Length: 125
Image (cartoon, rainbow, N blue to C red; front, top):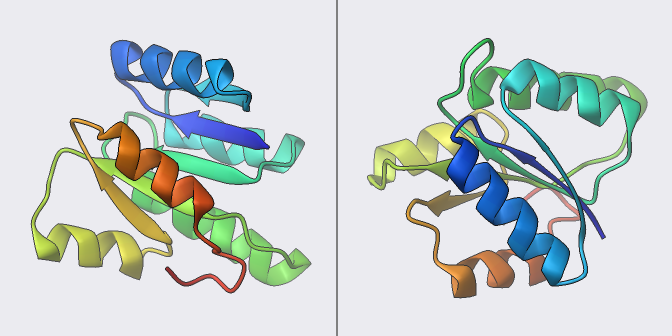
């Protein structure tokens, strides 16, 4: 399974990439939303973990751009929001932008792996 991690915090980005790689996932990481869109255009990913607050392009804009491109060419890559904000309206904003689910920081490993097991094939959580 190929996973893209889009996270501007180098510690979190490295931790997630290392953890996912050690668990057998093929992981690529980028540090902003524009790079996430470019990586998605260049490669095929089974999952994207997308921080919502990043420089250059935030996770909301990157997700909307990916969803617009998917609408034209088909397919659906599950996108999971990564955010320090844990209020219901924050979760709703993530879903409204086209993200499939939500993972709050600090990241709970059991929750992370549970999300990877979900079926997001229809674009809903």
